[in-house]
Image (cartoon, rainbow, N blue to C red; front, side, top):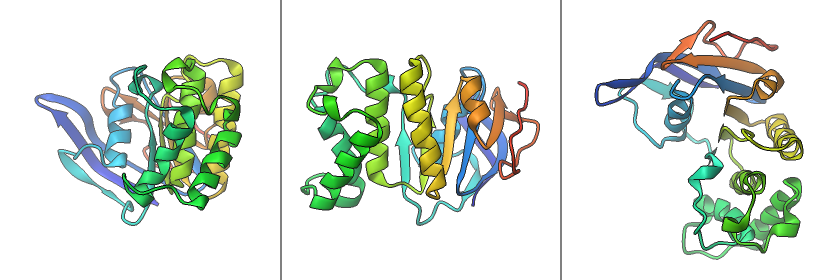
Length: 221
């Protein structure tokens, strides 16, 4: 279990998260829902270790491999990488930046490409991809990381039905293998698929704050 206690994040005088408390368990998909600026991405960044909270704590991260999937717009069109190379970067966490991929790493890349149905575009430059293809490539990179905690920021927003279905199936599979999965989303259909939902409004949680509750629940903003 990962436990977030009284987590506060401030950017200057602006409060991005205000005393947020929640818990996340293995084999569970938790959806973070809320409008832009509600604090969803900030909570993901705190869980990923990308930013340091102003106060509060996150317990249960020690020893866990964390895989973070940003919004596809975080990857620039001029990135000089093929899809296969981008996916292979998922092994850097284990191997380091300048070490060659092992046969096991290369096999993991091919498996991830297959699971996201992007093997046929593996040789293409990332900048030539559609939004759905780019998002699937980023998720494939996360699969190569083999994270115990999988964090996804708006993974299906604006995508067509086929891309959404592929991504959602993989998310469910990762939870089934034992990962803790946390998904920030605007999409109510995706939130309804999750085992639990947490609603953020202006940096504060609304309603129940324990994401370990069994079954599905929805909290209005």
